[in-house]
Length: 138
Image 1 (cartoon, rainbow, N blue to C red):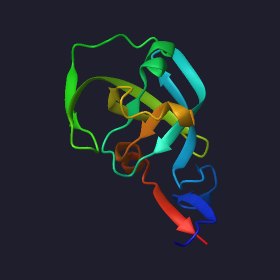
Image 2 (cartoon, rainbow, N blue to C red):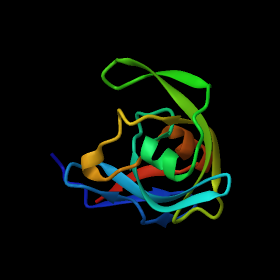
Image 3 (spheres, rainbow, N blue to C red):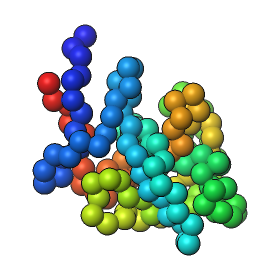
């Protein structure tokens, strides 16, 4: 297996803010905002297989997000059908010039790996809105 020595995210130019753990999982630090509440330096796992971004219930509580009656069905990577509340959220990574608004963010603890310290799963919805591409360089 080939080792990955460097991970970058590229838009017009490459910026190094993504990091990888020993298993090759990619992470980013984000700022999150919901209404008037804000969180800084939130660890997000970059999941290229996730269509939507997911936040933990801990993050939802810190941002004082009220539980909504609106839920969305989704399928976990193991094939299990799930249903979770959704919310809106503004996200900003270290290299973003402006925040990105996501209007459908899942609130669920099931897919979050608490042992890694991650509090967010960053889905393709974020990558597509920011037109960022995950790239692996030697």
